[in-house]
Image (tube, rainbow, N blue to C red; front, side, top):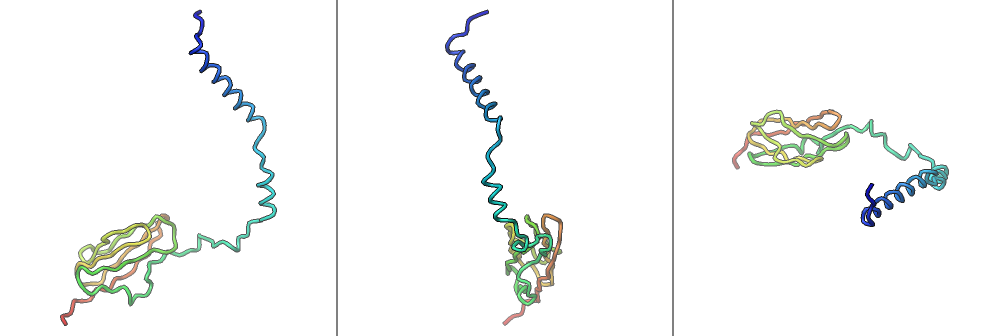
Length: 141
C-alpha cells in the first residue's frame, strides 16, 4: 500500500476532527431553560389575537355608490381585505371591462364599454366574493 503524502493526510485528519466535534455536540441538547421559563412567565393569550378563520373576504371600497366608472377607459382601484392571500382577480364580461393590472391585494379595473360588470376576487382557500361595477351610458355635457 502506498504511503499517504502530507497533502493527502490533511483532509483525512480534518474530516476525522469534524466528525468528532459533531458527535461531541450531539451528546447534550441545547439549553432551552431560558425559553421554557419565558413561556411560563408569558402565557399565550388567545384573546389578544384575531381568529383568522372568521375573517371574511371583502372588496373595498364596499360602498356601492363609489364603484361607478362613467366613461370608457376610466379606472377604479379595488382592494382585498380578509381571507387568505394570495388573491386572484377576474371579471364576468371582458367586453365591458378588464383587470388592467393586479398586485396581490389590489387591482385596477378599466371600463371598456357601458353596462354593469362583475369583478370576482378569489383567495388561496378558493373563497370568492364579487362586486358590481356600475357603468352607465356616457352622457354628453
